[in-house]
Amino acid sequence: MSRKDLSIGISEFTIKRDLADKALTTMSCGVEGIRGAKVVEGALVGYVKGPCLLCLYHYIITMGRAFTLSLHERGRIKALSTAGNTVKQIVDVSSGRLSKFNDLEKREILRTASYSTTSINEIRRTCGIDASESTVQRMLNKSSNIVRSRMKKYPELTQAHKNGRLCFA
Image 1 (cartoon, one colour):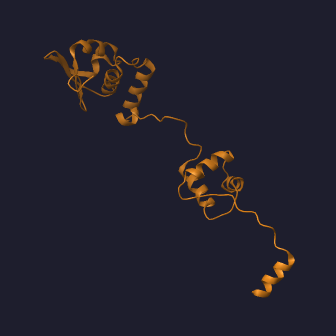
Image 2: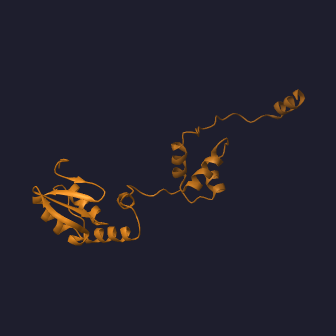
Image 3: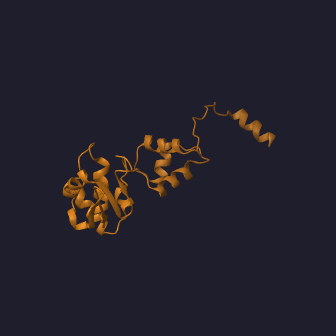
């Protein structure tokens, strides 16, 4: 749909007349949320109040490509709107699983891991984190400030080496 066909402002909308009837009948809030609707040059023009704007916007954006909002989704939108949430807060839905760590735990892990030779399991134990070893490793790998690598193995010092070091000091 081109910009000529639809212009949505903060509270004003314009829809082509052939889509207007369908939009009004499928929106959950119906005509009650629309104020001063009238036909101007073959298009329905009016003012939208509250969650009606979000329903109308969703309907027009997905028209012809997807299904309309279910009754449950419409009710959720109305409830969030009456609770005082903004349209942006209602629309923004996270895509994916929530993080296992909150910001405080992430900072604690990074603080413990920086400038130390402790293993991942020791970091988990000291921070008291209930997450798998690979989850902590993945979080450390994402951090650009910490580079962890396997330490080289060297033979232990013999008693002769220890005595030589003591004499040198």
